[in-house]
Length: 422
Ligand code: NAD
Image 1 (tube, rainbow, N blue to C red):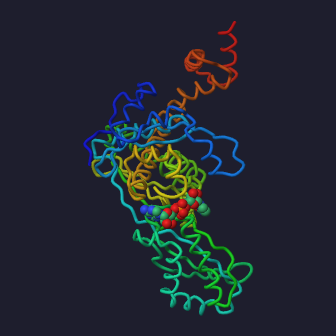
Image 2 (image 1 turned 135 degrees about the vertical axis):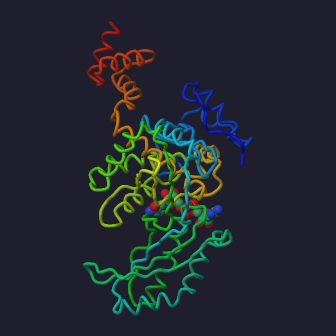
Image 3 (image 1 turned 180 degrees about the vertical axis):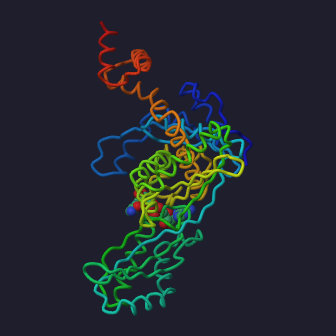
């Protein structure tokens, strides 16, 4: 464990070049952050062509670093890719406020990924279910044969479940292949297994196999994080109580829960994107998990400790990898993983869950006190000034004038721009 602090006081006030230089302590010697980041479109053209079809370019998104995080006793810097202002600052601020209580403690359920095989037209679904379960070892051997590398690394098929679901076209036999995909998200790995085993299952059951694809409801990959914010860091006992009232709104109302969880995903998706992982997989999994009881609810829980401090926890399915997909081929994703110092999907998941909780603390605290706009406005006013056509030092002049007048919109920005330019 390296003895370094993520409490990079004054990081926000450095120039971009100085911030990049400050990262050198966090990176392996052979990795030069400046080399990768100075060109803001750091994705080589030939790689773009190999990553997607009909490529015409790249869509750069800002990459920042959240400071102050302590996860399971270790200081980490968290790279976040997002186009939304305030998100990175909110994480750093929330993390700073719980450093005194040790930051975030996490737990990880493991790296089991589920693939589904749908079998139709089975005349005796109950018998088919028992037959499939009885032949577990044959299924395991056939599945493991398709990914010897994964098996060599200690992964592979662990379990099989069979569910009988009543559909409009009769009873479906749905087989879950439960595969330890280790440090990979595992979509390709388990999809290949599902495609290999589907005709075999259809043959055994006398049915017809149709879909063969992983489930993004990754409830075998749950990651939990918790933290305690001292009441003094929250803004006092009254603010703790207000936050609990605000959080309760999300428990009882899906309209509010959707926005509450969107805030969490502001943090989660930004780290997921920065590390080259699949944002859609994580988002669909998180929202499906939030609705698993039949009532869509919040992914976090907020309580008061017996000392009157604020305790928060999050439980979220995180199907993340440090190998596979874009994680190893995208130079910025590789840099992001190196900045975090994560050497496993487990370590990455633990950090991401902590970021989700930190983000939620920041959002609910802001909403329950000053409102969200105050924090948003500094950068938002600049964005509006740019959208209105401001350039160079006009941007700050217009943003400051709008903030002073309290009228922050494009019309005001255009009027101010016209005044400056006459
Ligand atoms: P992958 O196939 O590129 O890499 C995984 C493979 O890497 C493993 O099967 C294994 O053979 C090998 N490997 C090497 N070192 C490993 C280690 N330490 N741990 C585990 N495996 C190791 O990628 P993947 O993770 O199988 O699939 C991820 C990609 O699939 C993402 O790009 C995702 O967007 C995409 N995808 C997603 C969905 C979905 O979410 N519904 C569907 C299809 C594809």
